Length: 306
Ligand code: NVA
Image (tube, rainbow, N blue to C red; front, top):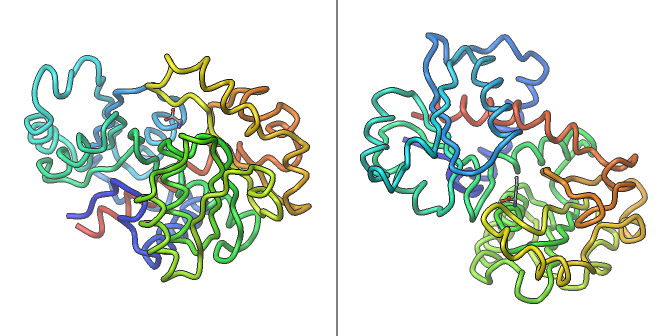
């Protein structure tokens, strides 16, 4: 039984296969029906969502399946009943489970007991479905992945910072994460990525200076400074992160044809200037669309790998 709980659950060859499949599914969205029946995919959200719910629901329908929305607040997973019991119940109703939640350990417990593939739709630690969409988007705009340099500027200690390290290293990218003091990814995460990068020709490094990080980058990425669950730290974070704002001036340090990614939701004037997000280098709307294609590919891959 395969699950997709963290970016490095896919080997470099598997990640490339999933991205190839995503591109194929994008070309012919209605041809492949691996969920015909329709088979049910349970989607559970313990945190807010727009893109993830919409892209999974649309994608599951396109694969011939039925997207069953399970309200995390109503289910009270881990409160009303244990993760273990919920896993056993949902595993009897659904062919797969897609879950957005807080601790990675909750997702791991679900995967251990569900008896069906479990997919991470964002946890505090990782957002691997987003990274598949991001890699697909880079491939579309740059025609390659391995060897490109990506600068992630902002909150490196959040799910997106970690996922960029692992997924980027898997793809053979040179990933530079630039964060203020106290907001860098953990050393263990950088080491985990560096070990993968050693096999793919990529690299994973921390560069606290945002100008140095962006200089010469092919892809520049940022994310909100206030991830879901960190709302009470908003004021303190705004001050610390201000020098890491992705402005037109900072983007000017990247290669002339650099592209800009942001997983959204975006806060213009905070982590990214409106002229960058809405400007010619931004590919964020392609990136948002690609969630559907990439997720259809990972669901198809996991179904086949069973
Ligand atoms: N780091 C952000 C990603 C949102 C898609 C968060 O966790 O809120």
